[in-house]
Amino acid sequence: MTTHLDRLLFAQGGQCFFCRKQLPKAEASVEHLVASANGGTNDDGNCVACCKSLNNLLGSRSIKEKMQIVLNQRGNFQCPGSGGIEPSVPPSSPPAATSVAAKATPAVGSGSAASLDLVLADLKKRGASRPRKVSTLTSTIKALLKQQQKPNSDVEVANLIAELQKRGKVVVTDSKVGYKLG
Image (tube, rainbow, N blue to C red):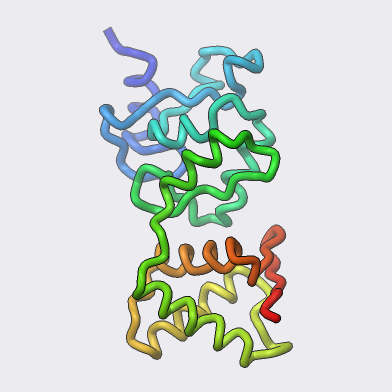
């Protein structure tokens, strides 16, 4: 007999609904878009297959909160269990969900700390000509790291931007970037 999860994985081509990466059945779970706790049904129209860590993170949030988490990734969505970056959790999220997401993000290591210092120095030097969009900031950081012959994968750059936000140096609103470099 075919299970609900089997049907969803088949319909999704064996991929996670959110990040589109191959999803082994052992790592998959059924995510209710409208949570069961909020009146959501078990119909295939309300359910998708995704990784267990993302399902745990999304929990019983409203569909609006779930969409905000996905949209905050600006087209670069990576499930937290795939070694990528954590989804940005809205401020209204419960502490338990935040701690799950925090565990998914690697700490800034010594190599990343040097890259972070390099990025901060470059942004300060730019003054009024700092990038104003996340996509431009991402390109700027990648070019800077490439020039310095440092690793510059998408995950590394996203982690640097997340660390700048965490330290209060960069403020991201929608796709716009503001600075508090002081």
